[in-house]
Length: 175
Length: 175
DNA sequence: CATATACTGTACATCGTGTCCAGTAATTCG
DNA sequence: CGAATTACTGGACACGATGTACAGTATATG
Image (cartoon, rainbow over all chains, first blue to last red; front, side, top):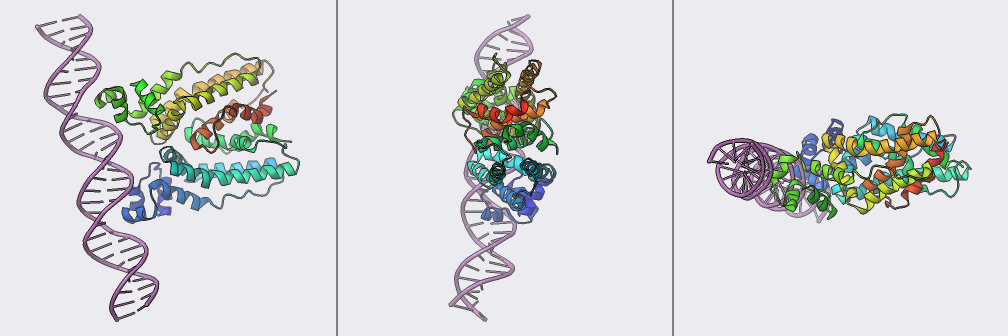
């Protein structure tokens, strides 16, 4: 059912409902309800299940490069896989459903923020990142443009975005 | 009807529908449909009508201060008025309704981005802002954290946010 | 006075959600 | 082997929201 749900979103649908998931998975609606409380819960679990291997940051020579690669991996995921549509739909759902909102923050956003906190802490240890930074602000500055462009589509979500983000933010982060 | 719609959102409702708007405005549902195609359209017009005076940037000594004040005004609007809830709801609606999405970008986001472009251009003229910047990236970096926190609520939307954003981004923007 | 415009209120078709229930197939366990 | 648990089916139903249709009323305009 998780695969079916993800495939549905891939196929272009953002407002995927229980009916569509059940039909696509070849099971009855009742069965879906037996395992998940809502369509959004299915989509969220499908999202997490397919991406739990995208958390670690690849080794890189410098902290700046490591951040660039980490953001690049996220942008690629959002651009080239159903993850983008999934995130858009779940973000919309989170507005009316606080449970989805909390799950999205705890299970999607938070782990990625933690990964970057570690990158920054390591950078501070190596003398590449300024000490005494407010990590939460920095992480917002790094991640937010990606979600901003994902949601509003006022600017294209290009592969160059991480480099552009770092061009603006890195001078305020570097030691 | 616009006032009624805005008041409804203020009262805590994010998923405001045609029924609620009509009831709150004291008119029949048919009448609302006569003037707007959807509930989101009413809310959007109400939002724009109440905020078209918040576009200009106040005069400030330095470009950095001007940016801080401009972002501060936006944060205050989002924090202390129905604008925050309105934006959250409309952003959610924009995911399934492209018309709302375009209107949100063209009539809400774009004018504010243009105001900041002017601030930055003026700053470049005064020698306070680096020349050759990619304005779109800078503007994303400045605005995105506000919308990011608005949507996910993973971090509080405090009055200090603009200062924190500038602490990270200004070094990459200053001449 | 006649007409156009705005509004009313109900009714209706439609869709998606979430629950309920009786019945079936398969698996596990005594 | 037989009994009980577990998973699933599919149809029915209540519910709420959306959007349209229509016949009728009030009000202002000319």
